[in-house]
Each structure stands twice: as C-alpha cells, then as structure tokens.
Image (cartoon, rainbow, N blue to C red):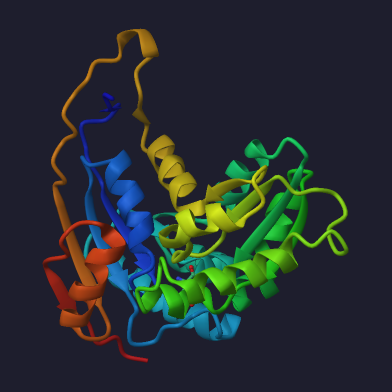
Length: 283
Ligand code: DGL
C-alpha cells in the first residue's frame, strides 16, 4: 500500500495515555503514518485512571498534554479512553493545538459497522459511568448497552492475554453484556473502549457471539488521525506495492520507572521500546 501526505511537513504527534496501554494506539498510528515523529507520554506513576474521578483524571491529563506540547507536539492524540471520556473538554481548553480523542472515532466506526444499529461497548468503570460512548453512539442513532470490564486491565498487564482465567472472566462479562434479558434487540458490534482490550481481541473474538463484529477504538482513531493529516491511500487502480517507510522517531516519557516501561511497553507496541525518559510531573 502506498501512502502520501499532501503537505511535505511531517508533524510531531504527541500521544497521551495513563500508562502503557496507549501503545496499542501508537502502534496503529505508526502503521498508518510511519512518516510522522512521535512523542508518547505514559503516566505510569498515577495509573489506573479507570477507577479515578473526572476531576483527578482531568488534572493529571492536562499536566501531561502541556508537557507534550512544551516538547514540540503539534497534534495531540488522547489514546486513553478514560481520559477522553472524562476530560476531553478540559484537555482541549488547555491545549494550544488540535486534540483528537478515541471516543468519537470509536463510536463512528462502531456505528458504521452496525447494521442493526445496536452496539455493546466495554471499558473501564470510569469510562462506562461517564456514558461518553453512549452519548456518541446515540447521537448517531445507535442503541447502546454499556458494560464495565475492570478486571481486563490488570489481566492484560499481567500478560494473561491467552489465559484460562481471562477467558473465564471474558465469558462472564460478555454473557452479561449480550444477555437477552437486558438486551432484547440483538447487538451486532462489540466496541473495545479501552487501550488494553486490543491485546485480547483474539480471545474476545472466540468468546463473543459469532455474528458480532469487533471494533477497536485504537484502529479507528489512527484512521481518523491519518484523515486529519491528509495521509491518503491512492485509488486502487494506481496502487503499487511499496515498502513501508521506516518509523522516523519515537520518544517515550514515563512518570514511573523507565526500565519498567521499556519492558512492558514492547509487549503493547510490538516493537522495541527505546529512548524512555523518566518524568517527574509536579502534582
Ligand atoms: N488507558 C485506560 C483506558 O483506556 C486503561 C488503564 C487505566 O485505567 O488507566 O481507559
């Protein structure tokens, strides 16, 4: 596949997440836009965000995106579903550059994929309680059932992406989410509204009802950013098989141990994580 950017300027994209999970979004971005340079901020000292209040998440996220902007980020991607769901307005108000969160692109992709206009969305407690995905889907005339799946984040961080315990937990959560008693109209899309869930997509594929399509907000956000930057695929008749461009540069910032971030991060990114700088943000 060939890509082209309409402008010769390749922007510095700042990606923010509560920890390493947002590397699934960075991974999708790098696949779509390898020409860009990236700064990634993981607030590993203060995660999880998924169990915190909106005020706390907004305070943490605003500090982190200011840091990314000070280091030259020209476009901000809020990879964290919880931060997007709880604090996107505050982040936008504090940022001096364009901000793209994961909720709108995720909802857009799920709405496009659902023929029955009926979607199940899963995420952290905070994301689900905020009803941000519900609002985004209902605005597109899609019925929604929301289901918090808080155990998935620690299970994925433990590396249990193909583990009987994770499978059992997924069976329980999805049986509740797709239960006919609470969801009489058949949902035909499962929207993954958390950074960690793409890592258990094969497991969720096995456990979810067969007719259900799985939509991943990481993928749809990367596509949205590519559209925003005018990264274009040529018409199919002119497509040539090009080697993908090498990734220009990724610099990582972590608020907890850089070594720990390096180790766990490579699992989420699918590439070696180098160039990690420890950051101590003042409260
Ligand atoms: N990054 C968070 C999200 O996507 C999951 C981890 C956390 O709770 O901090 O919602």
